[in-house]
Image (tube, rainbow, N blue to C red; front, side, top):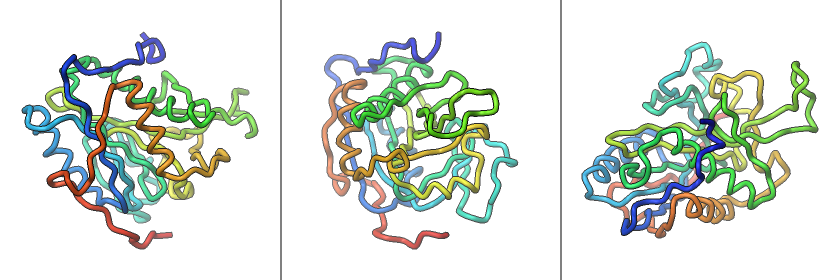
Length: 256
């Protein structure tokens, strides 16, 4: 069964509380974010906390997933490199990229990892659709892709494609963490220090690169609507009211 064949609905069991929806300002330290997720996953699994989606940005950095190959780290001294337990290979996070950490209890939903990945992809696809951008899945590469007919064709004659969103998840006791990253307006040259997700044949793009100069706050509104369409209701929670949530810095220096 291909990911496009999954039912794009991943609602919780009746009576489940809404998913907490939290947005952090500034740039959040990566290690602190991971430590918070680890703690929160345990609380969700034990029934001490409701599910959570956390939207944020990181300072420039690279992460290495469980399938990362060291040869794909082209410039190891450019930005900090963090080993992470999520699936996938190398990816970049930085200012202008909306990271969504998705902490959901799949025991309340579907205990199906491939269907969950397809559902997360659908959130991004639905967000893009609301901006009249056609995002697509590819069975041989996780993430969300856009066709670029204005670019030269690939060596095999097919239309060029660029990745606009990456996905990488981990599960612990059927509670998910990590999630997705949607390129709104990052510095795309920062991807040049890695082979993103181990894929050399395709490029990377952003909403601004696609000709859509949107604000991050506008993207957040569309993400929330698309998420609720797939996963059900959310409730907005102020970041400073979430115990242990690391705060973001205002404007740290960005390396060249």
